[in-house]
Structures are given as C-alpha cells and as structure tokens.
Image (cartoon, rainbow, N blue to C red; front, side):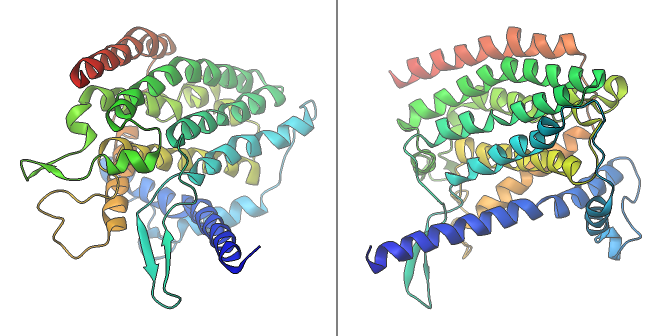
Length: 343
C-alpha cells in the first residue's frame, strides 16, 4: 500500500469521526433551539435560567440522562430491549456515508484537495432511502420487547406508518432522478447548476413542485414529527414505543429522531434546492459553498420545528388516508408528468 492510498484511508477515517461527532452533538443546540421556537410561538421565554438565555440547559439535560437510573422492565425481553435503541440509531448515522456537504476544497498547509463527503456512491439516493428505512426496526423491536401494550401499539403504528409513506417518499424522488439521469447525490446537485434567464435558480423545485410537496409530507411522517407522530402519541399511548425507556437508552431514540430530522432537511436541499449552489444574483458574494448548504438546511430545520408547534396531530385513520389515497396516487401522477415533460 503506497503513501497516497494511506493518506486517502486516513482522510476517510477522519471524515467518519468528524461527521459522527457532529451528529452525536446535534441534539445539544437543536433541543435548545426547539424549546426557544416553541417558547416564542406560545409567547413564553423557553429555557432561561441555566446559562445565558438557557443556552446550557441541553448540557444539564445530557448530564441528567447520563446519571439517571437505567430501568429495564422485569418481564421485558432484556436483550432486544437493550439492542433496539442501537438498531434505530445506527442506520440514521450510516446514511451520511454518501451525503455531500460541499464540493472539493484545498487544505492550505498540506496542499491536499479533499472532498466534503465520505463517498460518492453511484446509487446514493437509493442507499439513503434503503438504509434510512431500517431505523423503524429499532422502534418496532423496542415496542415489542418492552412487554407493554402502549409500547407495542406504538411500534405497530410506526411499522404501518413507515409502509404507508415509504412508497410515496421513494416515488417523489423518482422525478428528480429522471431529470438528473443519475442516482448519485453529487450528480443530482450538479444537474442544478446555473440559472434560468439569469435570475431564476435552476433547482428541481422549479420542475418538481408537486414532487417536493409529496416528499416533504411523506418525510415528515417517516421521521414521526407532528402532525404525524402517532407512534409516540402521548395523548393515547403515554409516549408510545419508548414509554418504558429511561436514561441513555431513551436519549438514543431522541438522538435518532433529531438526526432523522436533519437528514430530511439535508435531502430536501440536495434534491430540490440546489445543494450548495448559491441562489442567482447572490453567487457573487464571497461566501463558501458550504455556507449556502448550511443556511438552506437550517431553514428546513426551523420549518419542521415551526410545524410541530403549529399543527394538531392527525387521527390514525386520517394518517392512513393521506398516505394511501392522496400521496401515493399523486406521486405516480408526478412520475407520469415528469416523463411527458422529458419527452
């Protein structure tokens, strides 16, 4: 193995470590931000006492979770009960193996060009959708292994919800794949370069507005965010699939939910909003490409938080109706329209 190969392997390992550490620490700022968003929407202050404007409240919560007693119900399937949070969490992290955060950059000290992604898979979008869907197994096993009726109902709801919305979510991406003529996330971003008439962004949201709406609604259901949080409906299931979990095992489920929300925001930006491409007329600003990527992702994260504290929860029959009778036919119609457009 030559020196260049060793450097490439070392860079991949460093990228994996950096991305993993960022994802592990994401709940710290996001929980604070979500509480602040909720506070402002509901005319409250939100966290305010622990640190300036409550900025250290998530740190206090993390310390609390680390030192809380880890309770395992006596009649639970103890092995599966302990394994389920990891089964839910690992796929949520694994999807970032192919997520591109930016194009290549040059490190000044070593004069080495590196890419801001771990791997450019030629089936990137297929990999993300396939691996991301595995997390539901952790939720199902956690509900079943808890030996609790509320947890079991939450797990069953989650599996039914995943089946209902996974089809619409996948079909909503097909139009983007048809336009880019590639399954690679990097190719999808590159296909959105340039502008129309000099000032209209050449982003897929222009060509796929219906596909984007379907994707956004289906993705919101896939990550169990209000108004689609039926698997953990505290009103009827007392927290649902994670009702018996405490301490760090509970935090793994919450970490998975926050990482999934960020993943959906990232995919929305990559598939429909040009990735790291700057908006026309603003691309002359001396800002790095990753700035535009983070700004777009931040907008979607705020949007999901805003929706959570604005819309009421659907009934279960409404949830199924939207998935099977509305989103799925519309996603098939979008594929047909895209095909006719390309012809």
